[in-house]
Picture 1 (cartoon, helix red, strand yellow):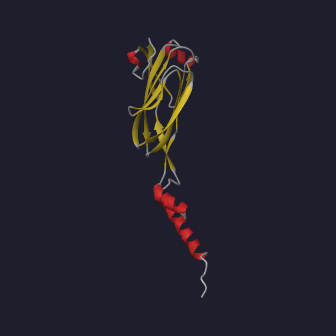
Picture 2: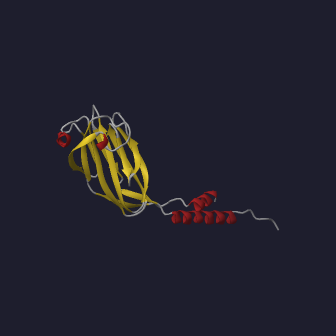
Picture 3: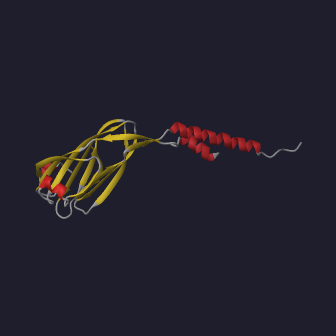
Length: 191
């Protein structure tokens, strides 16, 4: 019965649902950088635009791959700013992951969501974010100074959301069953 009271009060999202997230390709601006960006700031502050391209929604690339060298002509002292939009059909939670060598940052609707900035080896970072239904802008900033050059992006294909009323209904049912068991199994008083 105590469990039922807790579930009733909190309205646990028992019976969560999912809704798809639609995403297009990333529009990429490639930069040649002249110094290490020590703080998260636009790459145009430390470099110049050298090329533009696109990347698929989820990607995982290593700059030593010949497919990517054409974009920059170099594997060091480079960076990119990638922009795309996602459409969320229902409010809910989604997981985003950015991995990089060296620094990267993910912005959602202009707000910093993942800070993986600085000089370091490949390191993935993820975060679960609450998204309202509608269109959201995503932006990744990445730079590579020297050494391995890696960047990856992954996100859930669906948002997950719960129905607190369903949880409250389950909590109420647990309380009713608990009361019924207490009444049925109550010791009888003698006459």
